[in-house]
Image 1 (cartoon, rainbow, N blue to C red):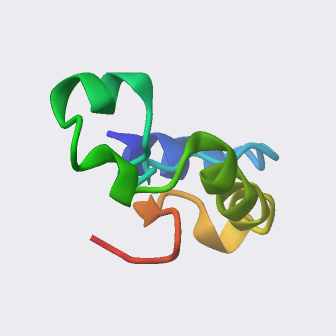
Image 2 (cartoon, rainbow, N blue to C red):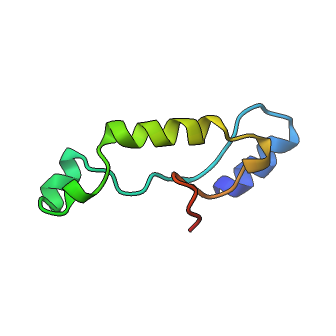
Image 3 (tube, rainbow, N blue to C red):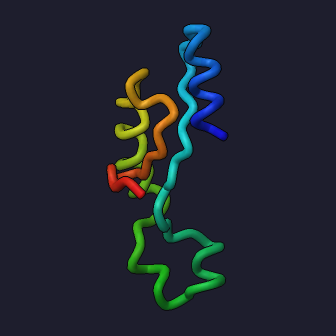
Length: 75
């Protein structure tokens, strides 16, 4: 659905991007409640944000509608 929205909106020249974004696994309280021992092997939210923010800020019109993963790994 996101791909279709990006195509429809892109036709109008909207400056907005529409991308499904896979954040990956992040060490959060919720993850710790499910996987207490394994959660520490994933990045904490603050470390994730230092990777994700530059990645997201570099997105442009050429990326509109693409399914993306933080870290650049495509699904």
